[in-house]
Length: 261
Image 1: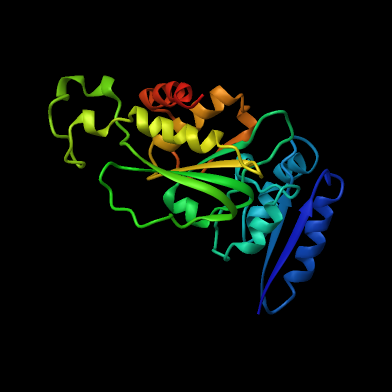
Image 2: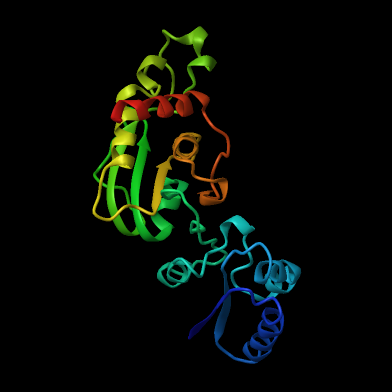
């Protein structure tokens, strides 16, 4: 028998500590395997602060230790579903964009393709899959979006022309192509914006961008967020993420916006 105790909470700073202690005191006397999952809404104060204060207790006794604040699931916007729908994995960190209220079109999430397969997004979403030029692809990538409205695939490598000017005519490895064949072009940028700005009966609340765990997805996210006025707190990335941008990708994606206006 395996028992999961799921505790969704919001502004429970005066109760969460005693609650965890009481639940743990009971569970440790049982013969079956158990875990405690605290689903924090992600508020900057309240429960969030209290959880950080008792972090040592949670890490010692809970099967899923607390992740950094940016990776905590949001009980008010699908985080609860994210937990109960994901298969249990020891020590796993559940990724879920923290959907904050505000006047912006959607939330942005950058993940590796591996993370995409185990990331649950309960809100209506669209997906941009970034692969290398010529990389084999077999249809839609595996994802955890409950309501995927639309998706597209674009091909370009994580190559910045400024870094390879002295090798512009050379064939770069491991791609076996020249820089001109690898960098993001107008068509890829246009395809991205065609997906993002497409009129739909139900607009997406999350735009997910996936790559191989390099700079491309985060660069696309930063470019879209910059032009669409998406605040930093509505932008998230996965654990296996290089949190820096390819400046050429950012610039080209921003320029591509004019191609579909």
